[in-house]
Image (tube, rainbow, N blue to C red):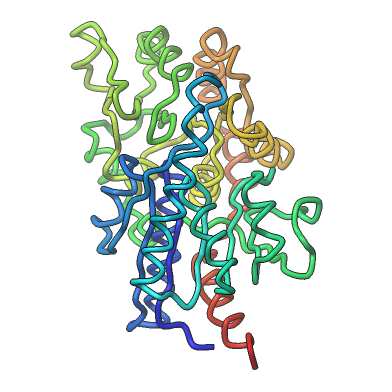
Length: 368
């Protein structure tokens, strides 16, 4: 079977969107004439980021399960039914040869419909603890690719393949020198620099820790690049907001420069964020989001902690101890170097190409 048209489904956060785009780019590099259509959730960030990357996208009227407010899920079955109707229309118009899912709200109805139509489906599970949707879809998938080893407990072994997690190519392909990277954020050479980020949607505990402790970091002569997440720009006293050793914004447009400038990264423990941290060889302090499905961010963090590549701070403790941990880590350059080497040992720099090749090769063997 030759691959001419493929649907790529998933989104909701940068941790789903950017890997999906990376795989699409890898597929296009191998098959320049390939027609790629993304399917995402209306109102989510994929509806903006995917077209910016040069791909078409169609949105579904669907939402995820709300774990913190159960009453808000009353209309979820109706949205799911509507999404299947929309998916059927998309498939009838586009007629894909295969569907690839990366997780997120839209992934399940797209891949489930493809399986019902006997269209080959491919999954990628980025986290070290598999989500329920992927466990269901994996039963009929042509191939299940995973970001961490030891996932046999979740997926059929005969279709399971460990590939690592795909990351944005620009993170590795255009690594700037440190001087240029610091200049991008208006910072100075010769000073320790920490990159703080809570993901594209922000992290309340990390942001609160920074609001309360940013003055202490600056007093320690530590420079800070702080991504607050959408809608979380903090109210800081004017002298701090304009401090020459601080860059703060809702979203970082120049991530290669941010990583190149950083001596230490503070982050949530989303699988793709960790893949980027490891690929860049950065020591890190991780604050897993405790309400992620199946608490998968804690599982993700443990992989790095057990490998000696990171420290871990519980979300409930972050406001009390996170700034102290940053200062402590900055005072231990040999430990940071040790963590950096361990992080590089976990890195998979070509996962996007491996996934693209596996999809093409698997399709070629089907129906022979």
